[in-house]
Each structure stands twice: as C-alpha cells, then as structure tokens.
Image (cartoon, rainbow, N blue to C red; front, top):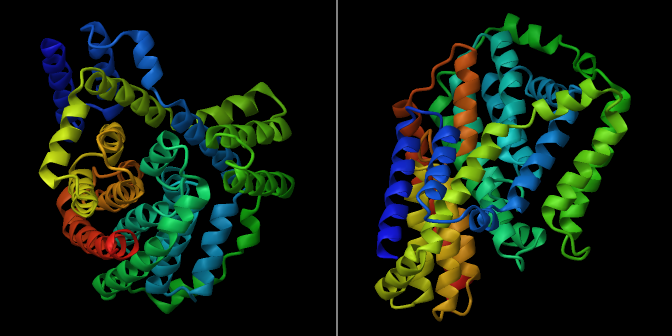
Length: 429
C-alpha cells in the first residue's frame, strides 16, 4: 500500500506541475494523469468511474447548452448595448455596468459560460469607443469569480461542493454566500474604478456613435428568445426547488437543456451545433482530475492529510475554518481552483469522520477561499483562462504579471472580508 501511495502522490504532483507550467493544455495533462493512475494499478477503472462526479459534469454540460442556444438570440449583445447607452457612452460607467452584468450572470448561469458570452460583446463596445479592452477584461474576470461565489451553480468549486454535500441546497448557497459576495463585489469595483479612472477616456464623437446603435437589431430570433427565456427561467426555478423535488441539480440542468433542444432543433445540424458549443475541454479536464484525485483517496493520503490538519488545529473549528479559508485562497491563486477543491472535498469529509461535528463553516470557508482565490492569478480559475484565450484571438495579450498586480491584492482584500464574515456568522459563539 505504501508503494501505491508513493505512486499516487508522484502522479498527482507531476500532473499539478504540468497544469501550472501551462506547457501542455491542462485537459491533456489531467487526462494523461488519470490514465497513468489506471495504468499503474493505483485505482481500477471501475473504482475510478465511481469517483467521477457526474452531477458536476451534467450540471456544467446542461447549462452550457442552455446558454449557447440563448446566446444565438443576441440577448447578451442586446443587454450590453443597453447598458452602454444607459451609461451615456462613458467608458468608466460602462466598465461598472459590464462588471455588474458579468457578476449577476455568473451567479445565475455560471462564470465559465458567462465570460464566453461577455468577452466578444466587450470587444465590440471597446472597438466602438477606441479604448483599451484590457481593464474591461480584467474587471470581468474578477467580477465573474466574485459573482459566481453567490450560488451553487455560479462557480465550478461550488458545483463540486454542492454535489458532494447533499444537505447543502441551492438556497443554502444563496443564504450563506450571496450577501458576502455582493458586499465584496461593490468594494472591489470601487477599487477598480479608482485604478482605471485615468486610462478610460474617449471622444464625444465616439460616444455619439455608440449611442446611435440600435440594440433591437441584435435580437435576431424573437421566437427562440421567448423559448430560451422560458426554459432558462424554469431551470433556475428548478434549482431553487431541487431538494423539494428530490432531483439532483444535474437532472434539472440537463432536463432544461434537452427540453430547449426539443423545442429548437429542427435538423441534425442544429443539434450538432448546440453540442459543439459545449466546452468539452473543461468537461474532460474534470474527468481526468477526478481520476487523479481518486488515487489519493484510495491510497489513504487524503485521510492522513485530514488527520494532520486536525492535529495542527487541535480539532478547533475556528482555527480549522480560517485555515481552510486562507489555504484555499492562496492555493487557488496559483493552482486552478478546480483541482484544489477536488482534493479538499474528501479531506473535509474525513475531518467529519474524525470528530468535527458541524462541517458547515468548513464548506463555506472552502467555497469562499476557492472562488475568491481564483482572482489571485491568471491560472487561478477556469474563467480566467477562457478570457485570456478569447483575448489572444483578438490580438490582446493579458500578461500574467499585469493581472497579478491587480488581482492578487484584490484577492487578499476579498479573503480578509470573508474572514471577518465567517468568524462573525459561524464562529463567534
């Protein structure tokens, strides 16, 4: 067993190292890491399949299909142009409004799909105003991670936590995380507006050009828009009621996706087009990662880490919660928060078996740390990497260090606010 534990740790660390290096695409690295775990006999294929969280995968896939079809209607471009016109073409006000739209959409849809929709819209507005798109893109990354913290479906770490801990419902996430996310977002946006206020200037002529745009022309298909909004509304209602209905969140999301496909897909091409918009690289990244982490679980490494953490904190819930919050944030800043959370979930579950009766403060600390920590660097969260990739296609390079000098201090401030919140709400007894 000791030999298996060494093999599992080695594969895990090598996989992490390659993910951080960004030399090879993280999906390829995660899948090869998972295959090596199987090839070395650390876990069997059957055991590995049990460790793949199909609820997380189903929820992500379903929401990606719904958002992709809704995006075809031009709704998101319509909303962005309306926001830009409400701001009277002022670049700074537009920054604020686009950030709010990104944060709210991230909470209701999920931050990965939200940034996929927002980035092209952002480029069309910044081109119109002839302003540097980078401040907008960096602000949208930060807003998407903070906004995504507010709900179960907003950020992949929350999806994974909600899937692993059945007693945490959609409403539990809103009740525990929405308020602190909103407070943190407002404070963060004030800081970003102060940072970028001198950079974002344009001419009156360019403002007039933006004001002359007709947002109604963006709404391409009124029937599809109506169908999409009805299904999206019913899906979100389903998330609120999923415990009452005894349905997993993935069932709700996939149900919504396939009802929308039934209503809108007239030909095989329509169906194939909808499926082509799913971020399959993200889905397979999750699959490989779950298998890699399964090696650590099956060889007892996670359990021994949990025992060490309890020994370090003396089982004190206050110290443990704050430790998890800061450890999650710092680690998630430098390692994509998805693999980190995949490792932490079984560790916290093991802490419950070792005597910590109330695990809720630990789950909320993990969610806040991992989601807010995603703003610490460009590799901190999936949404960050997607924005960077889309920006590169438009010829805009967002450097690691330039983002780091903005994102990391904001992340530290966010976690400090979260620490005060966690302590007052859960630990000051």
